[in-house]
Length: 57
Length: 183
View (cartoon, each protein chain N blue to C red):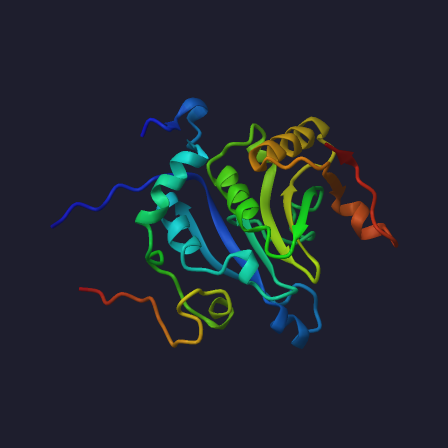
């Protein structure tokens, strides 16, 4: 990742670099918990009963 | 087993918080309707959240959506925020989506020279406008505040002047608090 720098041991990412990753991350993060408060701000899931819990194998 | 995809760790963990205007009406105590949504610490998890939640233009009037460093509550009473203040920009309804995204990317990507001074950011949807504020830790540190304000305007390509209000002044002011700094 040429757009990250470890100078000052700080993890820096430019806006342009961050934007290149946007389209690859469409799913909710692992461990995300749905609840009533969250429901009000979800795009496509709003109004649906939806739990993002993955079954352990 | 397939290898896990590479992820990009952030310097800090950040928490999204939502203050729901519908819930506000039901509850008497200010701040009691604010709820943490999720804490993330990689670029990938940030986008996974951002891509699935409403952007400011889709939020209801009265909503406040926060992104603060983990363990810092977006309240004046939080010990890390208590001596701080905030820079605020405002724009028309439905106009803050790009400004908000660019604010988030500058924060989580550690683009501010005084990034350690930053607590987080909040977008507030109101009747006629949307406002974005960056909260900082030590209002008395003028050099840090001025640097953050100037860099923020550059990142957003925001041309109007913006003001910094000290939380303590905001608490005491019976009218509108005065700007401590302006850039």
